[in-house]
Image 1 (cartoon, rainbow, N blue to C red):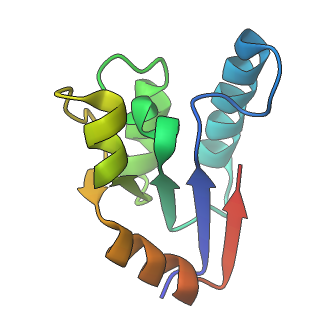
Image 2 (cartoon, rainbow, N blue to C red; image 1 turned 30 degrees about the horizontal axis):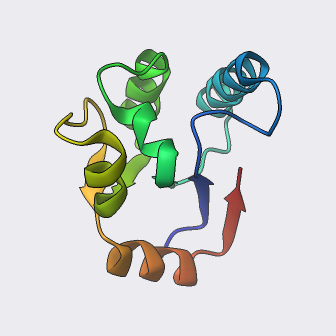
Image 3 (cartoon, rainbow, N blue to C red; image 1 turned 60 degrees about the vertical axis):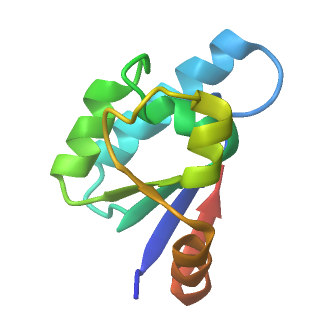
Length: 112
């Protein structure tokens, strides 16, 4: 069972200006990496799976998060529909059965 899980369901943080949202998301990910109290997993779905591809502007920080022991999980259906043939550069493809189980059993879930 995971203590804490973060859900990222978009390729920006918040609504409105896209550039501000990208900056905020990058800052958030770097703060998580620097934190002493990291989540055990980050789940990516919908357009959030774009962050895990080789075209992502966040690969360096995501590599660091994964290297620090955080499991990065991408919704397989989302990868197929949003990313097409692009493969993941970081993290792994999961499915809704695993994701639902993980979220149900987690002590704390934070959705961005």
